[in-house]
Image 1 (cartoon, helix red, strand yellow):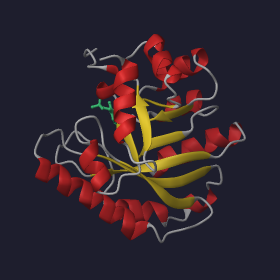
Image 2 (image 1 turned 135 degrees about the vertical axis):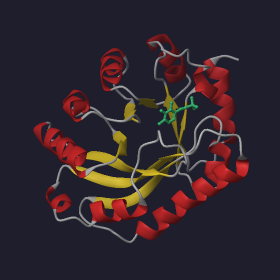
Image 3 (image 1 turned 90 degrees about the vertical axis):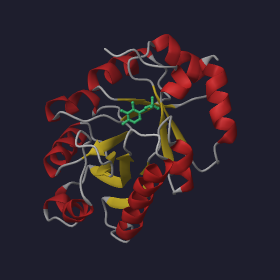
Image 4 (image 1 turned 120 degrees about the horizontal axis):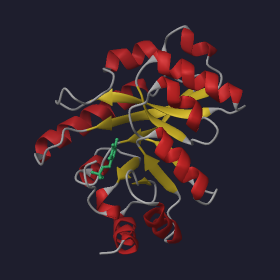
Length: 222
Ligand SMILES: *Cc1c(COP(=O)(O)O)cnc(C)c1O
């Protein structure tokens, strides 16, 4: 099936209140343009420089989401245009995002990544670490960032019960922290669900799914 057919099929089954991030990492601009022409306006990338060069080439009414793990020294390359940073996992990174956002006279929306997978390789904070971060003295000074939600990646598995448990846990943490409202914190977005698990994620309260291979086809490993 074509990118257009894949996208239309996914969208036709998606509840209206769920945002779809088209994960276009490693794919050429021609593929992104096909999705754009089908009406897609949110694209997710996991490498900052790749996202920046695609941003240069693509139409300007796109929301660019950084979904990958971030090196602090590269934040400056996306600060002028990024719409949402999904995988924030430390106060130091948040400080750098705040600094670069200030330089660009912007407020940048961020999600905190929570570790829900059983795999050691996945990044993210524990519930307590999220709580510590959101209630820290330092974060009060960060006027150019806004924490708008949480993000998580489930274990890479076909075990539906395990996926269910992991998404349930993230939703539970989200609900536990939602009361923490301040000038730069208002949890609304729960980013969870990828090609192989987004239906379960949606059942468990996801508000934003990140779908790559089901739209653009398999990625060849670099
Ligand atoms: C690659 C990636 C996705 C999309 O994965 P697919 O299985 O291709 O849908 C979603 N989220 C993150 C963080 C990713 O790195």
